[in-house]
Figure 1 (cartoon, rainbow, N blue to C red):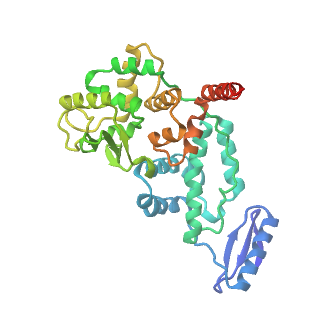
Figure 2: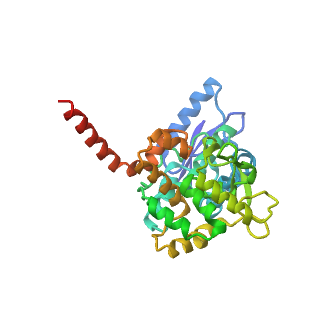
Figure 3: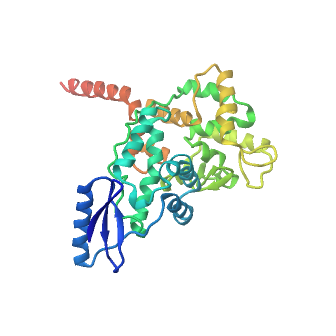
Length: 353
């Protein structure tokens, strides 16, 4: 084994099977020496495994076809593919997986932050598939380390989601066209996500149980499992919600997919249409502040908090896997509840005299 310098770059040269293997170590001789020493120790133990050479752009194809398409939801795979095509492959695609160093990734992240074209959350989302790729590359023998692990990423500030008060929820539903009242109300009164509402089929409306069985969501015109395993649950159906669904049944076109909400020809609704057209027009008609469909779910939680519903019950209604998730997402809505709790404790203590 030896260390070789070529054009300002250092390589650890090893002979795991009698043939020379050149391991790129960047421009640091110290790192090359450390890697050389590490390989020497592994060789003596019989543990030396040299990664198979492959460019990042080629491994990205294996990552999508052999891992993402098998293990991940289509929406996640599509997001990863977009980040790879638009950002990661143009930046790193020409490099071998073993040539990509932590400092290269850190410089890339720093540049994205300085350019300010992308939000901190978008920058973090771009790095997610790269981290998963290198974890998989280690398992498959294409890398010995993950250069993305430990990278400093920009801090994401929490932006509070706009929501409606119970009175405003009623106004919104009243100003929504009759054929779509149930669609909007499912977000406000049952806390369903937009994809879950658009993917709702009539067989999942359990009239006898007064429940909606949330077991699928719509994405890109296709039905898939909802966000998480805990999202698949039966949600209580208030009487007023049952009435709206019965009215929807009389107005609903025949859908080959048996969708509750669909276009006139029975095909799935476009997700963008819900926020940009249906919800925007209803909010404008009712002179209400602009909120998204996710804001309706937020309004659902805020109304329960204002009504004194216990957090553990809200967790079940939101179908979160842990009540800590509920606190993390909606804890900022609790200050008034905490103030009231303090007053109640004071009253209880002083009235005991």
